[in-house]
Length: 581
Image (cartoon, rainbow, N blue to C red; front, side):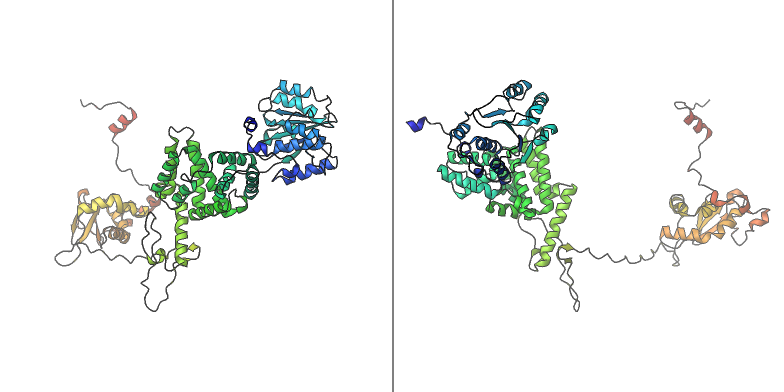
């Protein structure tokens, strides 16, 4: 019955370190503090910073015990004297603790500082201020002067998880020690030791789960060990995050959705699953880059590294980015599970994502497939066998039909695909044979064909110096296999005749067959239709040279259609209407 009356105490409280040597993973701090106590070179103020559960407050209490211990041994407290027992039980008048998370105002700080000058039974009076970054600006200002010049028998120990929020003026007046997260091996040794001393029967698989969920924090790991001991073990990993990542690596959207559904049925909500996926992928990324930084047991480290190498660097980084963005979107999502599922399907089916990151991942995966095919002649990439299951087809198989007497050249280099050879130039297109007459000669384009092609294509492709002589001409009915172009006067006729070869070349290129051009004077303007180039007189016979009147290079094309005066008036006065009288 006596044992039943004793309340249960959590493992992290029962096995709190009582000596500097008991603090694991913080040798750089405990070694300096032990030497300072041994040599009587203790500073008047310390700042302990670091993640939660790494021993900041416990180290501060050990420092207070060592300073007031009746029988210190090489800087370590004996743990058996009255002073050490009082500090351990929390009843010592030599140690004053203040939790700034709940006592953060100016009134609480003034009350604390008002008793600083008072004496205490021990040699030193130690003030431990936890979460000091949460005190108000007024409280920090009140602490500042006392912290700078405290009484000779007073020592301040400030602890914080966020040193950047502590005033620079306070940090400059303290001796700063940084506490680090514990490595996986150190944390596993601590958990095994505590489990053995507490009589907790756990297997190695449970220890690995405890270490992983502890994430480098000794207190968090011992809290998880308490849960495992209370539950009698761990659940079989039906909601394993590794299974979800394995489905991502296999490019299996159905498998991904199935694993997410299993996790939801086992009670794991979408936000927690997303957080664990991010942590798993991060460990996999570190396993391929800096294995010493991974907070996983050796067996889990090997699994995470295998999945990471299957995903590849680009796929791994993209997975962390997409899931991280989904975690942000889940804050405002009406159904966080749908948001996470969409993100995971995009990762497992890269053809559904057209982002640059997805394209880079697909290219990297194809390169790895080509590389593996080049190194393994019997692989599916070499032989052209179609992949089975949900795998996507790899690169185009290598050709085997190499001509005899010619050595087969590999299509890829190790680790780097070669660019395919440029395609051969296309063969020259044969001259298109147009319609022919009964005599076998090519038939000239009709007047309608020439009119349609002239203004839109042929005329626009001529040089301005040539275009000016034929722009005002019009086509007549074809005659004798030649196209007839009528110009207004003989001066233009002479100039156009000098450039007839260029005009015929433009027509031939457009129709794909030879087109002969015949220039004549427009009969509707008073000229003789039959007067061709042979009968045209030189331009000098008309009293002046056309080249002296204007420079053809300075001419510009006229607008496509002339605007009548009436139309210009209507455009100048919007809303006006033309009325016939």
